[in-house]
Structures are given as structure tokens and as C-alpha cells.
Amino acid sequence: MGLLDFLFGNKTEKIQDFKQRGAIVLDVRTKPEYKNGHIAGSQNIPLQELSSYLKDLKKKDRPIITCCASGARSASAANMLRTNDIESMNGGGWKSLEGKL
Image (tube, rainbow, N blue to C red):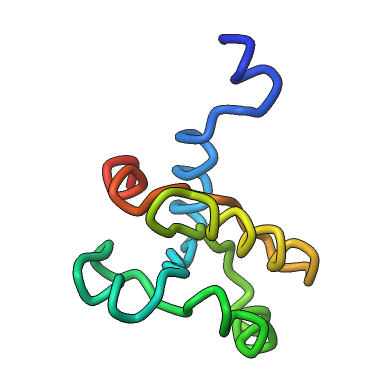
């Protein structure tokens, strides 16, 4: 185990754990960005609209892996979800995440 894995955990292992538990992949890019390419089966809720969907996402009672173009917006989204007691993690950029799923 490397130092980064020790400090932050192994992201790939966490992604696989979330996936095994039926995680929702939530892409928080804009609708035009999403239409230009996305992970098959992912849901698109732009970051600026996410707060309007918190109740619905909480009702699904499934972990959520957020993604975007680079990982910045998805980090904000994962934090917002955790703040609202929704189990979530930042999956980072969607192209990178796609390879880990």
C-alpha cells in the first residue's frame, strides 16, 4: 500500500465497492457536455441544479459516484451530497471513471 492509498484510501477499490452496492453514476456536467459523451447508464444532473434533486436522490437509498470533465465539479457535488446525508464519492473525470467501472 502506497502512502497516498494509506492517507486517502484506494479510489478504485471504493468505486468497485460502490458499484457492487448498486451505485448511481451521476454526471454533473452541463447538458451539452453530457450529450457530447458520457458513461453509459449514467444520470445527468448539472451541478447548478443538483440541490433541487437532493430529496429524490436520497429516496433512492443508493450510493452515488459523481463525475464531470476533470473532477472539480464532481468534488463539489459529492461534498453537497455527503452534507445532505447521501453516501457519495468523487469519481473524478468521466473518461477516467469509465475505465474504472
